[in-house]
Image (tube, rainbow, N blue to C red; front, side):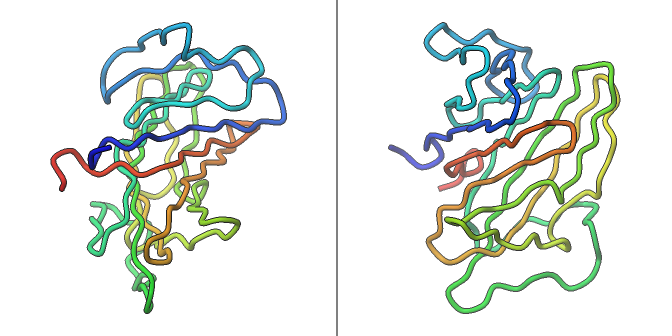
Length: 184
């Protein structure tokens, strides 16, 4: 395995049967029908996906192109708050994820950074609102939004990015890390 090419698993746990309509590789590309070996049967709640691929749930596409531990997190242009953020203590570091959500459907979709959490084992890491953003938005048909999410986690942790949005009767879990393109 080389850096930046670790595998990511998307687990979709739901209380109702969900139909996964496909997976698209790469940001900004059209939907690509996955090969038969990668399709999830109707009602299946666990679906593996490689790093950088999109999870498609109904008319919503979710991509996590960056998910990594970092000592120096990027700052969003429009943070959720301008207050002092959570600082890592001894034995802690930042975990940062970039998430792109696109609404291909006709109904509006609400996107809120507070719908995300970083899970380390059974513990949830705190969202650093001064290093996360932008604030919640509503996506109309054909629009997308990129979020920067920053959490404080123990050094060496392997956090899972968990997304529990109001528009989905279930949870998306992104497992693994993906460094930014070109990072060592």
